[in-house]
Each structure stands twice: as structure tokens, then as C-alpha cells.
Image 1 (tube, rainbow, N blue to C red):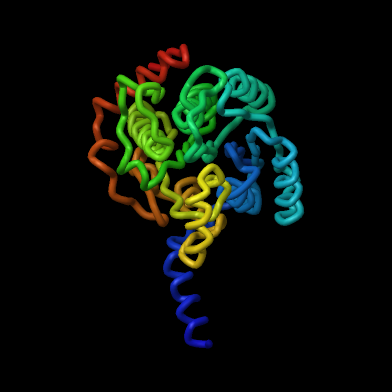
Image 2: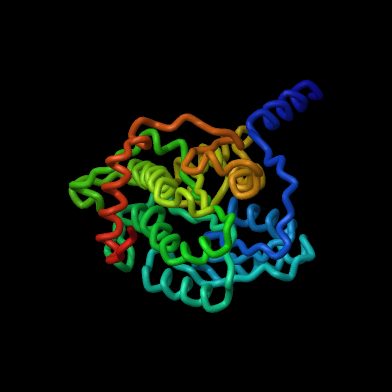
Length: 305
């Protein structure tokens, strides 16, 4: 019994992955984290609050957000954990959040685009975008655009985009971005994670010399609510739970990219387990990245040069 317990613990430690080693403290710093009412985002918010930051939990479910914020405030003794409504499936909500935040805060040092959906049956957002594309990519694209000037005014500042190893399977089908001709909810997620990678790459290129840097993150295979739309994944997560990261372990690479000193030369790069990771050839395609940027601007009705 002791042997099996030891082996289980060893496996658990191995699959837990990297740990953020930074000791950076954040008094006076302002952070926005999308989807921080649960899972990886909540644990990211907890650690940044523990380091003294003023943390905004930007989420759709405000009641859940308030519950998470209350827990984090009690745990960290940091009263500056705030909740604001943000529905990434509705551009009106995104604009309302940004307008309210900009009126409230004169600085923004860290933006973590953490929220996401996975394996959703075919559906569209309030603006008519396929849900994975609309929430995971376009919603965060618009949010970053609206908050970018504040980030530039607060340099050094960082944007962390949660992607996934699933980007390796993704492809940008410009002729069918909304999945109206052919749809697979598994592939739709992968395509959106590739979009996150390409956005990070193009954003880094456009932000050179501004003092704002950006990073893409694979959090690992994490026990979270993200798999709630797939019975099979929920079952697999239960069966393989000893090999699945906790939310706290899954937050480590986001924290590394938000906090680690000397990361500026690696803007635009992809990280997993708190170190640089291999990027698929499609995610390194500059022409696709630029085209996706332009198409995203057209879909959202914005100009972002």
C-alpha cells in the first residue's frame, strides 16, 4: 500500500508540471483577468492578489465572481479584489466593461485573457460569431484592443493569452470561419486556440518598442469546468484524475508569463510548464497571422493599425 501511495505521489508530482519561481511583488499594480471566477483564472487571481495587486475579476457570472472574490480577499487579506461583468460572447458587454474600467482605473499593468469555452455544440454569439471563435478569439481580441492604450500608459505591461497544445491540430479556414459549412466542436476549439497563437504573434510584432509584451500559454491538462460540454472528456478527466493538473498547478505558466523577470525579449512566444514550448508551423505563419488580424478587425468593425 505504501509503495502504491509513493508511486501515485511521484506520478502526481511529475504531471504537476512547472512552477512559477518569481518572487515579484505587485503593490500598486493593476491586473485584469477574464474568467477568474473559477478554475485556472481564480487561482491566478488568488496568487496575484497575494502579491499585493489590485485584481479585477472580469466574468459573465457576477454572483460566482463575487463568491470567488470574497474567498480570495479572505485568503490573501487583500481587499482590492473586484468583480466586473464581462460577457465575451457579446461585444456590447465587452465595450461596456472596457468603458467602465477605463473610467475607474488610470493604469493597467497585466491583462490575462484567460476565459474560454470548449467543445460547445454549434451555436453563435450575440453578434453572430461561431461560439469558440467569438469567445476564445474575437472577444479577447476586442478587449485587448480597447484596453491597449491604458497598458501602453502603464509600461512595463504584459498581455497573457491562454492558448493550448490543441493549437497543433487547429487550422484557420478563412472560407468558413464561422463553421457554417462544416462543424466539429472538437476542431472548433482547436481552431480557436490556433487563433490565440496567431494573435499573440502578430500583437507582439505590432507592440515592439512600446514597453508592452505578450505571451501565449498552454496551462496543461487541467481539472476545470472547461470540459463541461463534453460527457466523454468529463469521464476521461475522472478516470485519469491522478495525471490531470489542479487549477493551481494549471495557473503556474500564466503566473510565470505575467511575473517572471527578463521575459521581455521573448514577447510573442509560447510557454508550457513555465518554459518555452514548441509551436506548430501553422502558428508561425506570419501571413496567416496578419490576415487573421485584418479579418478580425473587419468582423468586429474596428480599426487597429
